[in-house]
Length: 120
Length: 120
DNA sequence: CCGACACTTGAACGATTGTTCATATGTTCA
DNA sequence: TGAACATATGAACAATCGTTCAAGTGTCGG
Image (cartoon, rainbow over all chains, first blue to last red; front, side, top):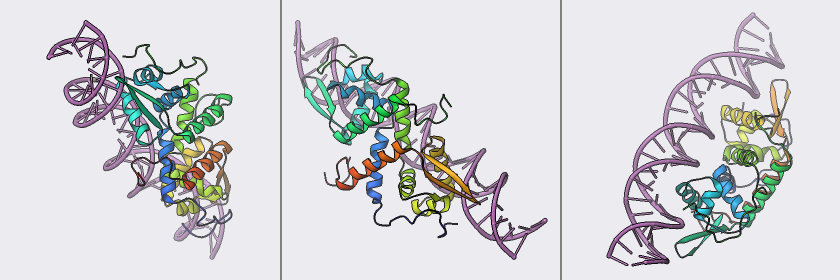
């Protein structure tokens, strides 16, 4: 196979995103694909929080929380601010936080996207 | 730690999404977090395509393509239609395809979200 | 200074993931 | 019917991921 026969229209070459854009996009989605990190980001929607509190809110250990925040920080999804011995995190990337809102809104008001989960 | 001291406002309990919604949302993002699957979905934006063509467009092997499509099918992100010996896939989930568009648009017109990649 | 605190970090480990290879199913054409 | 084709599937394997555990850094109170 891998032939030139087709069914649909020919895709527009050069209009599709670059490999790099694709990789970057995949990375961002990857960041959002872990329930722990998602809970962290959700907690941050209601305002900045320190690590201990984020841990409590997300159900992760302090260490796991710190690791996760480090990742999110590296991808500029969150920002840190230091006050005394605390590290206070907040959402940094508006695009991502909009994504979050949109995705959660969809998930909340319909069972839409389900795999082999219940309600089949 | 895990104490009750805080900096930001108290998060509104009961307003945050359920564990299930979070898990579902994470699942969907996970589906979008692989460059191969992303390329598949991007190829499908320009219309329905058969497996061989999708493989060629995405750079995946036929087998990998089939496996990936199976996953996407299970999550109702794509739909199949059979014509003769071909399986013709198309985007099924409008939410996901909107997501895709939005995410790619962001990635395309700015370097925004980068981790340790260039342009630091 | 010392101990408690808040957070960070690195190594290790089990689990999950995406790929490949080989084989299977089903279709078309001669 | 048999060969070529298009896709699907299962097992196996390396790579990646998220967690835990055990330190480590820096800060505050006494």
